[in-house]
Image (cartoon, rainbow, N blue to C red):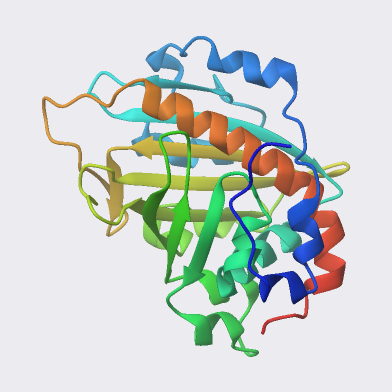
Amino acid sequence: MNKRTGITEEQKKLSYAKYYYEPLAEVPKEKLAALDTPIDPAKALKIQDRNRLFEEGYLDAELGYCVMEDGTGYIANLTPMPGVTVEMFDWWFAWHGLGDLRYTIWDPEDHYSAVSCSLAQGRAANLTLKEKYWGTTHLIREDIGFGPDELYANFTRPAYMGFDESKIGTKACGTIVTSNSGMRLDPMASAECMCHFVRETEDGIELRSRFWLGWHIIGGEPKKILPDGEVTPLEKPRALLAHNMKEFQNLAKLLPKIYPEEKNNWD
């Protein structure tokens, strides 16, 4: 077992602490092979075209990473999640920011902590699962391959990020979790926009993740934050894709077990 991020004596008493000790799910070798070579940027989904995710079937390069012609970075990941429902996925983003260990058990080798800055909102009984995390900021400590970093993620209602919200909850899309994020100490240089697009399948859901590095969506419109002339190092989207593969492969394994046990635990 690889070195883990650590667990306190108090955390060991929590009902879900047992998941900290479980072996992580293995990423399929055919997925890991995508890390060997970047994709053609022409096959990447431009942030301006993000609503193409609602189209039937699959887009070019559902799995891969690259640096775009404008210097920004891009990753795409496709994760089948058998036995997982749309509700479980929304629940996870409402639930995991309410206690540090909840984030850690997602990926005990790379996730140190995460906490929502809006704990009362996350615990409000009158809110839907989506409303519990929409408009919240999570402060995160994790390692995607370059050592532990302090990050923030501003989870935002999809309509405010320019997604066609009328199509959410249909065959085209079960839910979208989306945020603007970056490193706390250097938010401009590390800016990124994230989208987790969930679609139901015969045996569960499939997760289509996209990260646009060097971008934020502000007022529903993409804004390039990366200064003109700067280029994202290729190793950054590659490392982020490797991390994303790892954490969501493990979440696919974790959610069907932890959801029935903890779905009503908002303390």
